[in-house]
Length: 487
Image 1: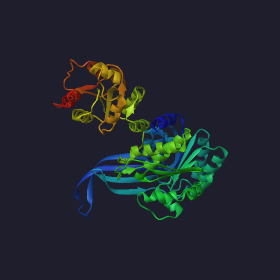
Image 2: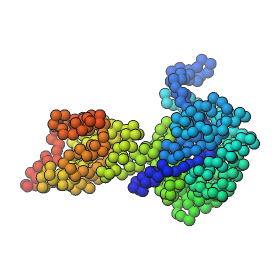
Image 3: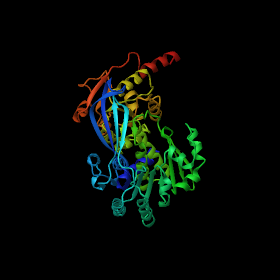
Image 4: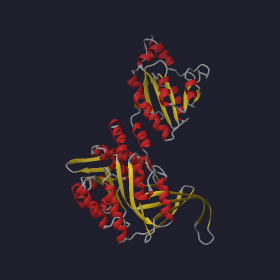
């Protein structure tokens, strides 16, 4: 599937997206607690850091921009300090703050979390939740009309906090009828936007169950429960596609005239994760706007959500991070894939480790060396000698196992992230492409005798020599086999 999804991800850079919805400021007060308050049996938190990040619809806009789209964000906030902090946080993430309409009759929505040693102790919510006044609504509708003409995709993020008034929704519906766009909606009550005839909607499980009048289920039973109501869910939302997100169970995707499609995700501890749904809906909208089929769009959206769900706080998935994640699903790469992968890894701040070898008969010495190599960084790339290369190095009776088989055995090791076959006598070309932070070789080499050492040093990498385990080598294993068989 990776070869299908990567071109879609590349196409995100050409998408112009409009995000409409409630802008929030997610504020994190981080500190430590070592005592209880005298006035009450509650912890005292000594705050050492305040971190302000865009939340709500603003986080959806940040995610769309991080994935490569050119984003316009429109919302209404107060004329207060929180609005200035939000505008600054958006600007730092590449989103122009001029789409925030300041309304002196409102207070900016803020969710303030107090943490001690990474554990959330308290959340304080504030801000206006009543519907916009007439003047603010008229100005917001005008801004939506102006932006609509210039975009390919529209994402609506409706938290039910008063920005998406009936008048604003009517404006969106009229624009969609006159000049259809890829319209993806995410909201507490998707029936409010049904007459806009969205391309897709994204309820989470609880929102879908509430919409359908169902009691909340548990585990995999939720999948069967929602699957029985496909037609009803599509009818209630007015959407052609409905993607119901199921946390660690992935997502269940319905499309008019097509069989249901299920995506899967990696289970993760997500106690402090916020905004994975914003990531999902952003990636889904951009993929659909790029012309991807629904199942591929859903897979891409699930992958992007998986990237962020294990993190703390409100966060976004970048195009580079998503490319690394997608590429990691296929461990065996071509030489052509390596340069792009390495560039994305370095942009994502990953420490790249490279080693190479024949790995003809994988033994304990190989596994120990590879495990130690992985411990030196974040991502381990293994260069694998081709069959012809092994014959030149080891003689006409080698290799015992073909390159494709050797690669698959290596891929089964969790410490190995990627394998790239090379035909040359040295891995110099792969090293030039990967530009590893660390190049690992066996302990029988030294800097003076290693031909690749100057190349690694030329781009600031380091060489690490790992000792071999005594009595473990492919040649020794083959000799013992020959001795025992009388050969």
